Image 1: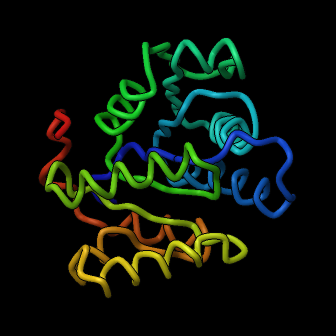
Image 2: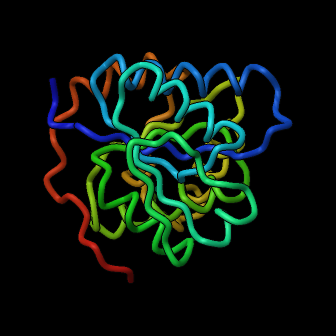
Image 3: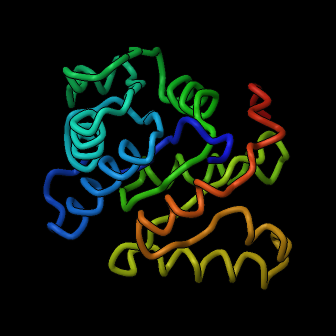
Length: 194
């Protein structure tokens, strides 16, 4: 197995999404646990976030959540996590998840998920980390993002090498297969913001 021990999952908290997205969240939690990975995520109990945590916990994973006070009050923290940290801000939450993670899996989500994804991609571009990033393209959800990345590169706001920072995969099973073989990141996380 690779040096990857803990996987951060970014995903949505909406409870109104189609079953296909709920199913991939359940599979993600289950497969990460069964493959021996610890899970870190945003600490919530709702939507895909709660489903990932529930299924990871049910299959024996150690699950750590980071939730800012504002969301703990609005949405509620997951009550059954292995470890929960209540933090002061969204910025602290993202930094703490990044520090703990050896790799990232991005499931469908809303603006918060996009924020997390773009920040971790930017940190990769700035050589603050070299951790693998897998985007699970369920139901073609991330196809517009693929097009946007292509456009950014085409217009020379990024280089073709930047397109390799995130790997689009069709399923969590594909991401897990790649995670098992990926070498341990060398840069880790620099622990500072630019």
